Image (cartoon, rainbow, N blue to C red; front, side, top):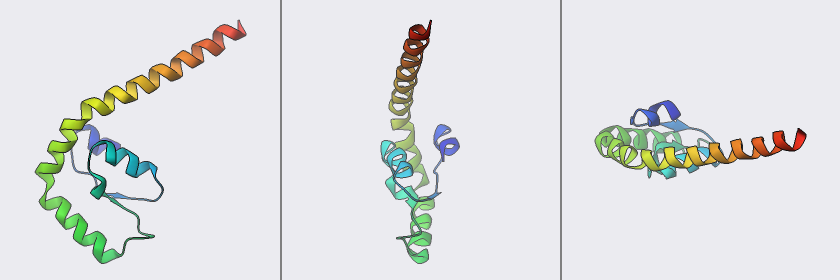
Amino acid sequence: MISALSVCRTPVVLGWGHKYGEVLSAFAIPEAEYDLSVTGIDTMLNGIDALLLGTSAIEDRIRRHLPDVVSSAERNVDAVLSCARGVTDAIR
């Protein structure tokens, strides 16, 4: 999923839990996730067909949202590094 998103390609995600959905929602493509515990196989296959037919529009959405997602990730890394520096400084 991350690899596909990072090169602006349409992912198809078979998973469970909320994390995949959160990531896909950040790119405005929640329809790319399928939870087989609640989605039937026919629904999933029809959805994948629709995704493949709409690849250009989906990839445009990914491309449009990618800079904001990267920026958010960088802020999170900066926050973690700041906390780690604080702990390191406190230990010294």
